[in-house]
Image (cartoon, rainbow, N blue to C red):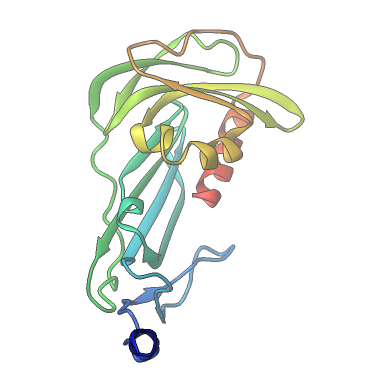
Amino acid sequence: MHLLTLFFGVVLLPKAYTLKCYECVPGISGTCTDTSKECPLRGQQCGVIKVTSYAVGSKILDVNSKSCALAEECVEASINFGIANTVITSKCCTSDLCNNQPAPEPSKSNPNGKMCFSCDGQQCTNTLNCERNEDYCISSKVNAGGQTVTMKGCASKTICSKQTTQTAGALGTEISCCRGNFCNSASSTSAGLLLLVAPLVSLVMLS
């Protein structure tokens, strides 16, 4: 009798409530059209994300997307190599179709007091003032154009922890983060500036 009650309880149990959110995944053109979808997982929220990249002071990429997201995926993150940097901003909400507005613009890029080494195509001895929530120094060896390129700079905690695997896939197989001024020790490199900028595009598209 107890088994029968359990069986009918499971069968007749109402479907767990999930949100309905707008989904918009940009293609190569960088644009997309909103469609509505029911989130596949209970606990997911409606999210919007903006990925903005700059190179030598000019904006080179500005991608906006919408989808279902876990709360921990709604973060503000930044990775900065001096000549090129990428900022991720996002926002989550918890009602049906609430992600109808774009993600917020990146916060103003004021120095935060942290300092790391960065590379200029010849040496990795330049001083880089970290900005926003960049409180880690980052080092990476990247394969760009058939050459191994050393990249150093500042990164936020999100880039160095939860997204380490994803970041490593975008920037190369060797990536490390550390805390403390100039902890990403200086070294030389023989890459040109364009080779240093190129991997940032990969990071943006995988984010």
